[in-house]
Length: 497
Image (cartoon, rainbow, N blue to C red; front, side, top):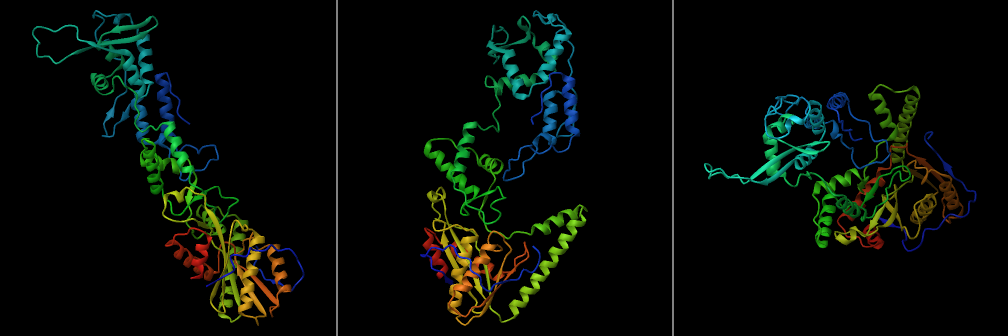
């Protein structure tokens, strides 16, 4: 494996003289509202139960994973019905009846002012109570029930363990009015067990904080995720909104670093699932793992064919696409079988440095290194033109110049070579453009060897036929995966081994 000079900057193409050049293309390229009225609550729940999946958020924000719709889960609907006092089926399969106002439990004969509440007032209290969620009901208990010291001890019950008494109230226009326990329970249609549970477990702290994460904790997690530098994507940089993190990272590794940061600052870290959910749903981030892309045209045709909606125009495009793919495969096979010189070239995924299992490196901005790889059929040798982002970018001008550097090495190895065939993909910004054509013409006119013609061939878009270069890239990635890369020179040394 040979490498072009790394110390010399990649020159830009300046002149465009005429020269013999032949290009042979093979083809033509909402949260639910709370109802104050009891009947309105029942109507809202009935509508929600008959609805399907809710529409996606109207915003165009993208996240790492598809968000669920917990509001339409059966258990959530069951919970809302239970909180609203509606009829529902419990998880055990038993049917729970609808809540209704019971008869006056004390019959108005107690010493308190229960009889002053009319039926309309009791109904308003009942409807207001069952429009609350569980936390709001606990707040209602807290404001309506007072815990006081036991007033007296009977002489015949010295063994009693009771130390407190409870006073019950209902709101009225004139203020809170004390009522008896029986009237309180009958109006709300609840059992004494609810009151007992609240007084034992919740009083005086009635706020349910289960599953809640403070805004401050969320900001700390988001700031930690944003502290990791992004890595550029190799494909579709102009149309893809997803950003990429260093391949050495995982969500588990990031959470370990988050825990270490919180502990060093004396902050209690959140749970792993909280960190993971924020990473998945509030960010559109991936990890920079090279993978093989599937063809857009083939996937579009398969998706439309699956639902039987293939238009005539799409069918013609797909048939032309398949024909071009077949012709490319045949032409590429013929070139492999022949003895004519064939040079395949392609850009490798962006290489980043530093790359090592050191925590501080994960927070540092990555230095990008680019590699244009070519494979020569005559000597089965791979040529690599390597440069870093401080020297040049990776546009058509830079790639053309890097290809000229590789061609110089090839003609030095084969000084009697008169013609050569170039194979590459159909990426227009990099390979299939006028800048590349001009660069090759410039090379033909100014080289001092026997090279007279250059024939350029392109693969069908979405179907690469330059597996030799892909194999070289795989070997490079394998060699770099077990190495610690501190600078661009480490990559250069790995390529020359």
